Length: 293
Image (cartoon, rainbow, N blue to C red; front, side):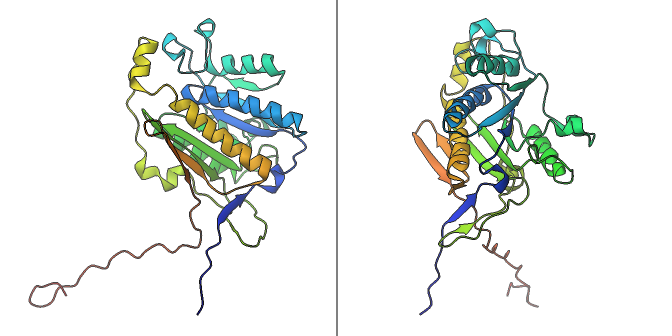
C-alpha cells in the first residue's frame, strides 16, 4: 500500500543574505506604536549580531509625523522628544546609544519617491521592508513599489527580497513574512522549501479594513482605546522572526498572530505551494419540469 509523506514546509534565507559582507539593508515604514519599538529591537539585535561577527542591519526609518503627548508611554518616546519627528527621534537616540549610522526620513514612504528609475531612487530601496502602518492604502502602495522594483536594475545590497507586514487592532495583532518575487531555494531532503510567499495585500486583502482612529488628548485616553503592550508584542514577533531567518538561515513559519486578552501567540504556517485549490461548485441545471437536476 502506497503512503503519502507530508514533509514540513520551510523557507531558506536568500543566498545573498547568507554570510553577507555588508549589513543587511532594512526599511522600516512607520515609527509610531509598533515601529518605534521595532526599530529599538532591531538595534539590540544588530549589536548582538555584531558581537558574533555578523554585520547586522543598516536601517532607514520613514515617518512624517511628530511626537505628541498622547504618544508617550505607549510608543517608545519621552516627554523631552515631544515636537520632534518620530523617525528622527528614534534613529538619533539609537545612533548615539550604539554608535550606528542609521538613517531617518522625515517623509512618507510612497510611490512618488520611486517615480524615476535612477540611482538616487535606488538608494531608498532595501533588502528587507518592514511596514508598521495603520491603513490599507499605504500597504497597497508598498506592494506596488516592491513589485515594480523587480523590473529595475538595483544593486544587490538594495534589491528588495522580503516584506514583513505588522498590524494590530485593540488587543490582537500579527506579523507576516512575504517574499518579493521568488527566492532561490536549495534542494533538501525530508523537507519542502517554499520559494515564494505571497504579499499580504494579495492573500489577505479581502480581510483588510482601516481601523477608525480619533485623536487622543492624553496618554490615559490613548490607553483606553488600545492595549498597552500589543504594539510591543507585534514588534517583538516581527524582529524575532527576522532574527530566526538571519541566524539559522531558515524558518518553519511565516508569521504569528497574537491575542493579548487570551495570552496566545499562534504561528502562521507556510501555505502549501503544491496544494490544488478546490473547484467551485457547478450550478445545477434545470430539467424540463423546472426542477434542479
